[in-house]
Amino acid sequence: MMHPAAQASSQPDTAAEAPRILHITNGDSAAGSLRQSALPGDVSIWADVLYEGPVPAGNDDDRWRQARATYLADGNPAQYEEALHAIHEWEDAVDRAHEYDEVILWFEHDLFDQLNLIHLLDRLSRRPEPPNWLTLISVGAFPGVDRFVGLGQLTPDQLESLIDVRAPVSREQTTLARTAWDRFRSDDPRELEALVAGDTSALPFLGAALTRHLEEYPSAYNGLSRTEHELLHVLDARACTAGELFRAVQDREERPFMGDLSFFRILRELARGREPLVTWDAPPRAGTTASAKADVRVTEVGRDVLEGHVDHVRLNGVDRWLGGVHLTGTEIAWRWDSSKGRLVSRTIS
Image 1 (cartoon, helix red, strand yellow):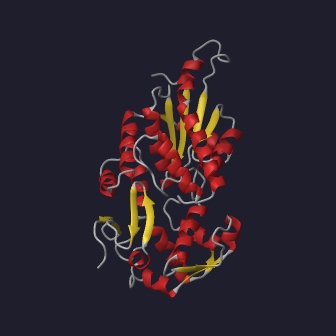
Image 2: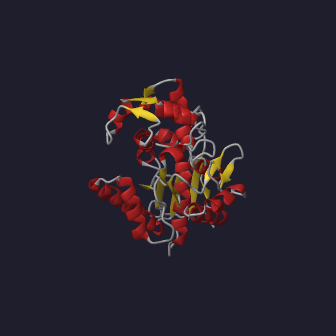
Image 3: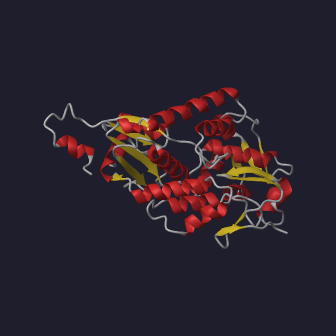
């Protein structure tokens, strides 16, 4: 199949035959830079925080939108309407993808992006009218950038320079994405773990990203997710503001994937537990700025948990969605064993 740009260039009336292009990327920052670049085409985003909250299985769009908007709103009716509107906008753009000559997907290497990528490829593959030409730009580094965090940190010119690395989305990539998306939404995490243990090379960043997702399961050692463990490790050395803590924890990640609001949600849960693991001098629903400037300290209980003397889940319980798995209570079916690099279906005695 000839690329639409090549088709257009072979026509005599190139002005009339200029291909219609849709760019879909991972958030407002990258989308804004794409709009400022010299690249032609419309720009839309696909950017749900899929590593948090319920991720319903099946293809019921209404159920999906309501579940995601309810979680993202966190009890705020106005934010529920905003989230619902945003999801509708994203879906509407994708559902009109067949109207374009080419659809270019821009996603990076981290967990946030890889989950959005497999969700998007799954949805596009299920449309009655698929895109005429679907290409992908998926990068984990950029020349001259020492610590590549994501597409949002690149300038319009830098984004423009990536256009030549795009490649057609293959059948193998679509098949892998659909399988991964189904297994991510399964209530049995062994299905996802089996996929990660297999061949995921069609989407080169997917395996590592999904492994990072599995590391958010409570540890078999002390009941902490990797994020919780990292933040307590930082606080064990020094007290700091929540903003400083967020940056320090993200610096410990191979591929930063979490925004500050997601991080602050985790921090609030640790501060509100029956036996708090941290103290945080911030109002319960403080805005990002106020929350970031408030001091955080580890408690003695937090240190006991960090050292493995006490189990966080046994002590405080858990109520957390990880894809299609809902972990609740003080006795849970699945934990992550970092020494073995796999899930274990037992709790600590």
